[in-house]
Length: 266
Image (cartoon, rainbow, N blue to C red; front, side, top):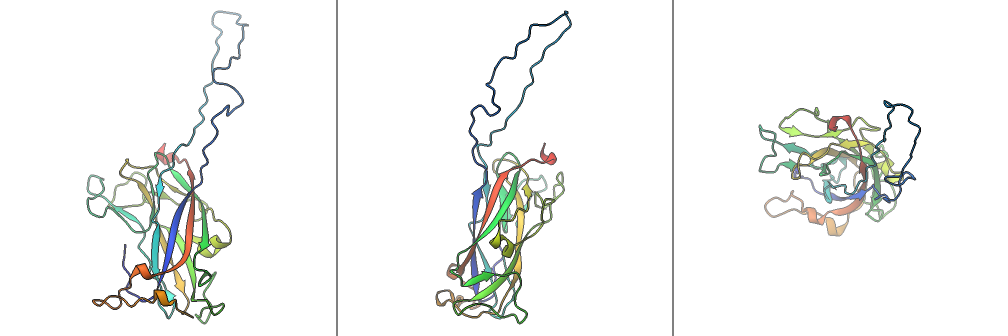
């Protein structure tokens, strides 16, 4: 994860919400297993009968991980934010994860044995109104709102470009982003849950997940206020190196995840 060098920080938290309810496994089609539909009207020796076999899949476990905390950095004068890099995997020439720092950056990891779909992204304010997600930063670059306000944020969440399904290259991203939307504006996700329909391929192995790298980007307003507890003075060695533990709480990104299918993993 890239470390920022600007003063002022905003903390964001991500939490995973599993969007797959365990179905009741009782008489799913109105018939009992082994129920007979008999016939006795065979007329000749080459007549035949058959049993149609159906499969109902019961999803018992979705295993997906996202970083619990994410810190972005804003400049007090406003402008482009600094955020962690998009998630990538680094492989050796045999296609195995490298030993040191094999997966880095902001990403969703799928440890399930089948593909999963991100079918919901929603935003919850954690800042008590001190930071606000807006559709656009004001033309003069200043923060809008009341005296308690610190700053405005205009942010988007974009998946990294997917790899070819069969390729093996040094940095991999196994997300299929050909669904409803390739980018989500967090202002929209604050108003209503967004369904980007991003798909993350099934795990490579128990210890080797498939990932969807995500880029959080955007701009902030010039600060109108400060939170005394979060003024980042940096260390003695580097006064411009902020301490992320002192960052303000801003908002939570909640992902709703469901089982999915794709011909690429059939």
